[in-house]
Amino acid sequence: MTLLKIDETKCKKDGFCVRECPAGIIRQKDKDSVPQMIPGADQNCMLCGHCIAVCPHDALQHTLIPMENSPRILEENTVTPEQAIQFLRSRRSVRRFKKKPVEKEMIQFLIDHARYAPTGGNTQLLKWTVFTDEAKIKAMADMTVDWMRQMIASGNGDKMAAYIPRVIAAYDAGVNSITRDAPCLVFASAPEKYANAMVDLTIALSYFELMATAKGMGTCWLGLITMALKQHEPLKELVGLPKSHTQFYPMILGYPTVKYYRVPERKPAHIIWK
Image (cartoon, rainbow, N blue to C red; front, side):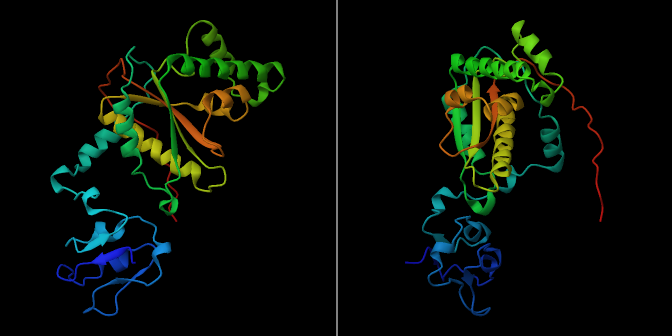
């Protein structure tokens, strides 16, 4: 049974689906013929949905991509370039959060939309590990600082950033610059042997972050925990990422205590024209 069914009464034989199929498994004999999936090519389908997305006539049905779960793109919801510029520029890394838990429904909402981020070959191999337990998040910060102390004590401190001693001193003074006392910590991870892992999970976290911004939430990427988690066994055990998921990055999430009113300038783009 073929995955693709085409309603010949709706099909205009324009060949959009043929040209847009990344796997090249839809063919059209001539301009007067209805496109068809190549026999036996079901296993080569990437399940990307390009075929049903590009057809303006709703002539295609994909067995594994139900039309009812593939809503139409509404022109009235398209953002203007000016809106997009402000939205992208106004995103900030948030480091101060309200003492307010993040609802499970909110986290689920953000992840559900982050899963639309592109992945290599539409593999969709990412997994999400979510922490909302204040004690566990604090323990991650403690273990990260412990790892820093061990690195310095072992003589490997020269391999770390020069600001690390200041981070430790601040932590001892009650300033948590590791997890920022955030009420939620999220890991996106992917299998060790997946070549596109870091690209995929970075894009997904960017989607997550931008949707969080749109919902009035704040986020921050956590580089210090990332470094510690690659080497510190107690932290690995506590976090417990899925087996073989050695490629990862964490992000904190919460309700920000601050509001921003301007979009600071950045360095000019360094472009090498060829």
